[in-house]
Image (cartoon, rainbow, N blue to C red):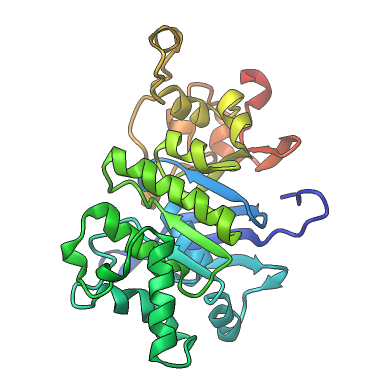
Amino acid sequence: MSETGNERPLVEVKGLKEYFDINIGFFRSKPLKAVDDVSFTINKGETLGLVGESGCGKTTVGRTILHLYKPTAGEVWYDGKLLKTDRDIQEFRKKATMVFQDPYSSLNPRMTVSDIVAEPLDVHHLCANAKEREERVLELLNYVGLNSEHASRYAHEFSGGQRQRIGIARALAVNPEFIVCDEPVSALDVSIQAQVINMFDDLQDKLGLTYLFIAHDLLVVRHISDRIAVMYLGKMVELADAGEIYDHPLHPYSRSLLSAVPIPDPKIARANKRIALTGDIPSPLNAPSGCPFRTRCPYATEQCAQSMPPFEEVEKGHFVACHRLKEIG
C-alpha cells in the first residue's frame, strides 16, 4: 500500500492472517481462515470503509487490529511503530478503541451509565479523583447528545439509538485517535441511523478521529468513508477512493455489490442492470482454491482456480485482486 503524499499512515496492516482451529471430530482440527493475508493503510483523520457479505471477515479484521484476537500472522503498525510486545499493545489501547455492533449486548445491564462510560477511565487510571471522573463522564455524555440526568440510569432504560450513544461515549473516554466502528448502526432504525452517522462525522471533525468503519450497507459506507475496501471470504479484493469505487468498480464482486444498491430515481433505477451472483458464498472452512470468488464469478477461468491473484495497484490509489481484469475492464 502506498502512502498518501509524504504522510505516514496512522494504521498500517501488513499480511494480516487470523485462523481459528475448528474441531472436525476424532481429535482432528482444521483452520478456518477468517482473515487471509490482508494489507491496507489508514491515514490520520481518514475514514476507511470496510464492506462485504456477512461472514467475510470484516469484524475479525477490526478485532485483530486491536489485538482482541491475537493475529495468526502479519503485522500491525500504529503511528510508525510495530505492535509486538504486551506493553506496545497496552499503550496502543489507550489510543485505539472500538464501538460494537449490538448496543443491547455490549453494555453491562448491572452498571449505571456513569460507570459504563467511566470504566476505561478506571482501567487506565486517567482520573485523579471522583470529582474529575464525574466531570469527564458528563463531558463525554454531552459529546454524544446525552445529559447529566442519564448518568444515574441503567442501559435497559434507553432506546437502541441512545444505547449506541452510550457505547460511543465509552469509546471516547480514553481520548482515542483511532476507533474501529463495527457495524455501529446496523441494529438501529433507519431514522436513527442518520443521526448516529452524522454524530460520527461531527466527532471526527471536533476531535480529529480516524475510523475503520465496518458495514454491509453500502449507502452508509459511501456517506461516511474517504476510501472503501471490499472483502470476500477473508481476502481483500478491491480498495479505492469512495467516489472511484462507486463510479468505476473493477472487481466483479464489487460490481455485483454496487448493482444491488437502491437508487432513489425511478428512471435510473430501471436502467440500472442488476448483476445477480449464482450460488451461495462458500464456507471459509472449505474455501475454493485460487481466487475465493471464482465459484460465483462469470469470468472465472482455470487460472483463477490455480492461484490467488495479487492485490496490486492498477491505477493510482486503486488496488484490485483479479486475474481477468483486462478482459472484463
